[in-house]
Image (cartoon, rainbow, N blue to C red; front, side):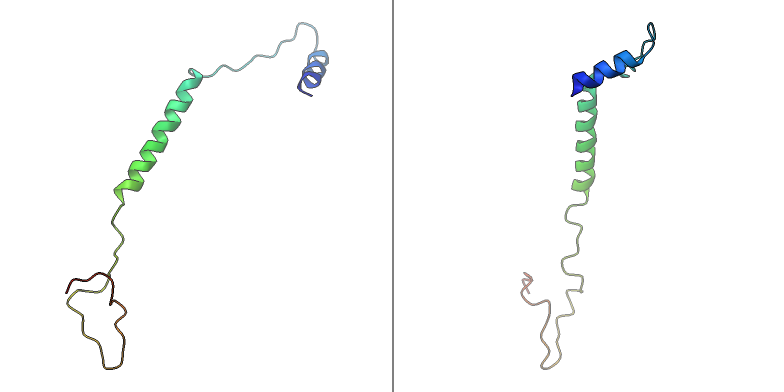
Length: 80
C-alpha cells in the first residue's frame, strides 16, 4: 500500500519538481531525552505533593462523643 501511494505521488508531480523534506531541529534521540526529562519533572511535581492529604481533618483534642453517637474517627490509628 505504501509503495502504491509513493508511486502515485511520484507520478503526480511535474518533472523536476521536488518536495522539500523538513529536517528535524535536532537529532531524533534528543526527542526521547526531552520526553524522559519531562516525565521526570512531572514525577518530581507529583512526588512533592506526597503526604499532603489530611487523613484526619478533625482536631485531635475533640474526641468526645454524644451519648449513643458513634465516633466516625475511631479506628484511624490514633494512639490516644
